[in-house]
Image (cartoon, rainbow, N blue to C red; front, top):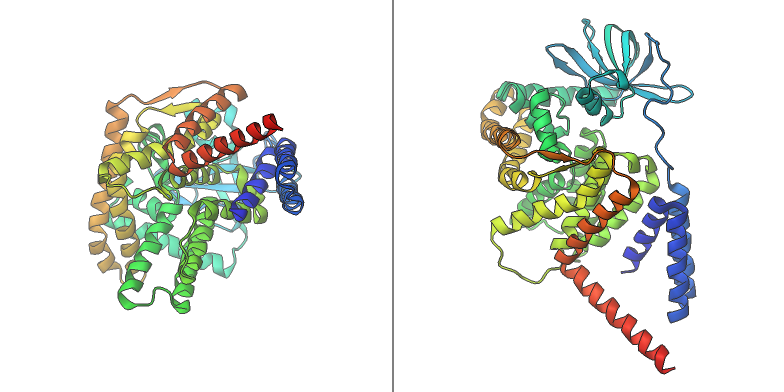
Length: 476
């Protein structure tokens, strides 16, 4: 309980700024007046102050720093380039007084690699001058401009470690395209590495409109599958609580996190999986709510800029919703279908305020679509991961092993496309103001808390304590 209190205080100062810091201070003062907990209150205020200090502040405008008309930018390739029929697509980060990102397509023969410093020559176009749907897609990647480059010059090579990771990811992408060319192979790569940029525009749009893009964001579900497999194997050998097995599992988890470029959602999930393994080693039941909050504190202390990424916010909110709804519940005998609906509904409610604030959209088919694709995702990810691991050693075997995973991935695409085509899509709310976003957040999280056994218990106890305090004051 103390760790949870500390974590929430940090998050209040980090996310709420001065208002959050003032709120924590007010609660601490009230607590002092009731329980005389001076030391704890002072410590909590200091933790909130640390959160406020580490807060990165508001995100600058995405077009800040772009020199209009510049035709020869130099920068670092920050995404894994993807070969398409129109050229090689990648993101370039240009450093200067104020950095900005370019979503580029290179049409020449030189193929850039992630981590390289390159010079581009070609035509740049600001987002405001692009069609609305294209501009929206680029904006989600935090690109300031789009560029078609007819010439690429390499001015700096990536490190040896980066080259090894680049080759490994290219091997994964190549293996999946050999197993199932086109969108199916691109989705398989997205499930394993988080890079779904190989999907066609129509398929990617269907995933966005149905609220299912999260399946290619490497996060807690991926690491949960890895830990579950490791625990199952260890359980048959009696090594579940051995230090060497715990260490080997944690090392594999972090290797996978590095493979997916330590994305914000992957870092949070890796920290949480590591702490859960530690709890298993000491024979303690993991308190996932406390672990989640502590993971957020650790990650944002080390990498405060992750707060501005959609990946971190969606992953953290969805996990929080699921933990609140499913953690520490009394034993129930719910069917798999009912549990799947609850999972999809809880994640939908938890992430809706963020999606409304970011895109001004609410998808009407998110819950049913996620329920329908959930079993296929659980099949496709581990089978594709196994095929890709074998493909590093022996490519022909990977092609055979990956077929069941490709069938599951193909089923996911067909379901998403069908739901996008036949069912009502997203409802546009325009550009909602702060008050409207707050109303949506209050409604959604009130429902999540109502679904949570722990939250109902806390609310009941809090109301009981308040009543007791009021009665004592009245009698006094």
